[in-house]
Amino acid sequence: MKFNDLNLKDWKNIDIDVNSLWLIDKRKNSGKHQNIYHGNFIPQIPNQLIRRYTKEKETVFDVFLGSGTTLFEAELLNRNIIGSDINREIISYVKSKRENNFSSFIDVCDVTNSNEVDNFIKQAFKQLNIDSVEFIIMHPPYLNIIQFTSENRDLSNIKDLKTFIKKFIKVVDNTLKYLKKNRYFALILGDIYKNSEVVPLSFYAMDAIKRNFKTKLKGIIVKNIEGNRGKIKTGGIWRYRALSSDYYIFKHEYIFVFKKEF
Image 1: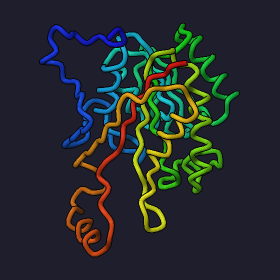
Image 2: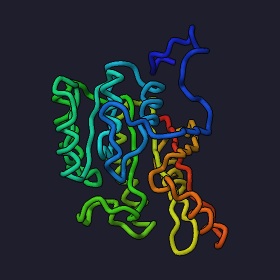
Image 3: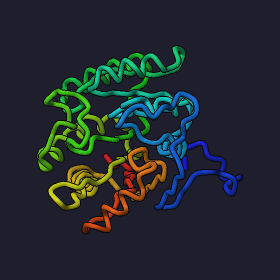
């Protein structure tokens, strides 16, 4: 286990969840974390993943930075971070919240564009004085369920599943080459309900990664959080709607952990 700082001599007291089912009562909202952005995910996820798959002073690359959830956990855990997002407004917000002396590179980048990614990473590596990253987190949009910008190149404006997966694989190709061989990356993604049926978006994306890149799938984690702000105080209504129809209520999200082998 050379890829983390966990003290296995005290393994019984390590609060790393190694189960494939994560039941989380509510979103952590301490420190800089604020539930202000539809695309943000709970801090407990990057916290667990960063501690499990990196050491202090190593570098995490959040490909879809959003409101900075991973950034704020990296600050707490003494990791360097590179963060990209296509949304200029949210990047400005994150920059205003980060610590000035924190080792990070945060900027706007269209991760579907290989030249733009290469230039972005070149600047990041120069500023951080590194030549690769040790862990990558990807939390992409769920098709066009929530549209984060009005730009056509934004993944959140893609309605067609095949087009989305094709663009997403381009993102993986553009970014995964900067991850060290035999290190880990995680995809956090859920499914959607469209045209009266479940679309297993997460498994389409996971399968596309396996088909296109030499990786090992190390974990499929199902995460459930009770404090979903879209469901708070509406449990009865959602239950009634489900019972009066033929569907089940989405309460989960998937975390796929991969090991890069190229």
